[in-house]
Image (cartoon, rainbow, N blue to C red; front, top):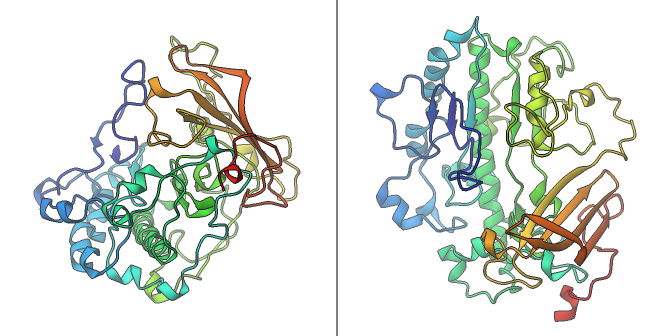
Length: 421
């Protein structure tokens, strides 16, 4: 069963070969509010559909400047009741107690559109306690092709009213604080909804035989490097949360407490952290498929050949189960993760963040290890889908142990930000 924004709306390949979605039940990301008589089998805890009168008034705001654009707690609770989640699990998960079942739940635009939380969540982060990003200025040695001019954010009506110069004009500091405050509140609201969902596994005594994976599709810049949104190769946009709960594998100790005890942030505060296990090793989301298959003790599909268009089932990702039991001090310097992002030109312009395929002229390919991040920007042919690695436009190299925020590019480039100062 798939609910919410599990897949990004639209097609990523113009309908030219994407494998069809195979879910017995598929509910789109922003459905109309489900009538009570039709709620059986649907997950409402992650879903929010703005009534038309609210959407027209607030659809393009990036932060919440007053009470008028914060959803009331009453409205939020009427749309996301805890009982609704329980009804779902009683109807879906309970029926699958003795069967293998899969539930995918996706959250839509928790980071981008107008905040979707009660005012009490905003109060968790008093504005006087909110700080700017640790590096809120554009690095002088940043290649111009690597800069993300955050055109998405500039389209928001409250940001437009600031009349910020393009492409480098900064957002006023106080407004940056308001955006960050709204983002923190939105994430905390999301966290409570996930907590309620997971606690239902305890209520149905399913937590001991259910694998849980929490991921995101991208990161989000909140002023780091003078950038916002997600259109770059910096870690703040390419790195995502990746958390696993696997019964008998990731449990660190036996406890009489519920596996997924709901922690109310208004009763316990934000500093209540439960013990967990983390590993410092670069991995990729493309490995998620083979990882879950192995955890479920199913045959892992073979590696995809080149080309693989006519292969029915294969994977390009390697299972990361081996890292679950890896000693924390083990050296992983030879492990790497890869990512890429396109640009239409060497200098920022209005379509730099989301260029159409026909407009892509440069592609930035990144390699990330525990020690460094290297990015090379090369010429790209959008017709043949080929990168020309002899046509180097710019390069970046950051030693992340001594420069964790990736502010000091060690490679020289002719077109860099300081040349425009």
